[in-house]
Structure formats: C-alpha cells, structure tokens
Image 1 (cartoon, rainbow, N blue to C red):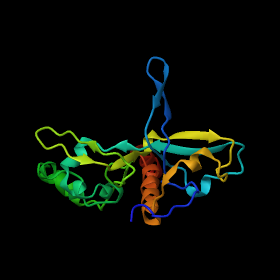
Image 2: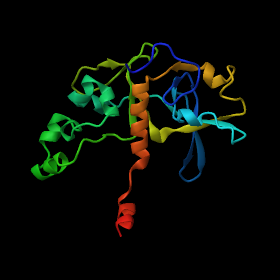
Image 3: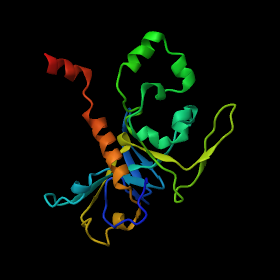
Length: 210
C-alpha cells in the first residue's frame, strides 16, 4: 500500500499538499527569481523536525511534484511499476534492454560485480492516484501513453517559513494536506533520501583513506 486510506492532520515526511507555488533563486549574469506553479508539493522535512520549539520561526521543506520523464517509459522493468525506482535494483534493470545488451563485456561485468543499488538517486516516484491529473507521454514512433504517476526530485527543494505553529489546526499547510504515505512507503523515501545525502565523493574518500 503506497498511501494510507485514513490520514491524520499532522505534517509528515512525504505528505502530498495542494501547494501551488515555489520560488528558486537563479544566477547567470545577474540574480533572478524563478517562480513555479506546481499543482502539488511534497513535504521533505523529517516528521520529528516539523515542530521545532528551539527556533522562533516554523520552517518546512517542500519539493514540487513533477511529471515523469519520457525516457522512463523506454525501460520495460520500470514501466511495469515506476515505484521500483524508489528501491534498489539489480544492475541489469538499471538500463533499457537494448542499452544493457550494447554495453562492452568489461563494462557489463563491472556493473554485475556491484551489489544492488539505486538508479536516479535524487528521484522518488509517487504512485498514481485519483487526485493526480493524467498527462500524455510523447514518444517518437510509438503510441503516446497516459499516466498519472508523478515524481519528486530532492534537488528541487524549497522552504516555507511561518510564525503559525504547525500544531495549529488553522495552519495553512495542514489544511492543504491531501495524501499521506504508508509507513512502508515513508521508510523507502527516508532510506533513499538518506542515501542521496550520504554519498561520499571520490576526493573525500581519498582523504579518508590517506
């Protein structure tokens, strides 16, 4: 079960909110502010950190719910159940069959020698739901399927500050809560989110080994 049938009103990691605004600073030659208008956003703040009495302003991190990429539909293993992208998978499932078969033998052996792992480590897929509008996937030379699977990207997170307690029933975000993940799904999100931030870059590995 991806979502629970009867949710509570507390804000929890992974909750889907009807929150339709995001702002992202953008720097090229000068400073700009990109405004986004997603239909839904997802809570990225851990449950135990939503209410923090040590700070004067209540803060919660959100990330917009966005459409799947067209390329996801080229992998039959993913296409059977896109939430497989939320879990570790065997190396041969990380690529579409034609790409896997086209790998040089040494590259294929190198990948097979590794244990199961995440692919697209900043992505977490949300299962289709009646609240989510369907959209069309456009593929060259193929039928254009419809889906209402969505995803989040951890890198797209933004924050909301408010002086009104998240414990208050009148808190705007609480009133916009639409879906709550099951404990199992929230554990998968927490595990993948932890793995995303826990990765050690090669230069740090060299220093640790020195």
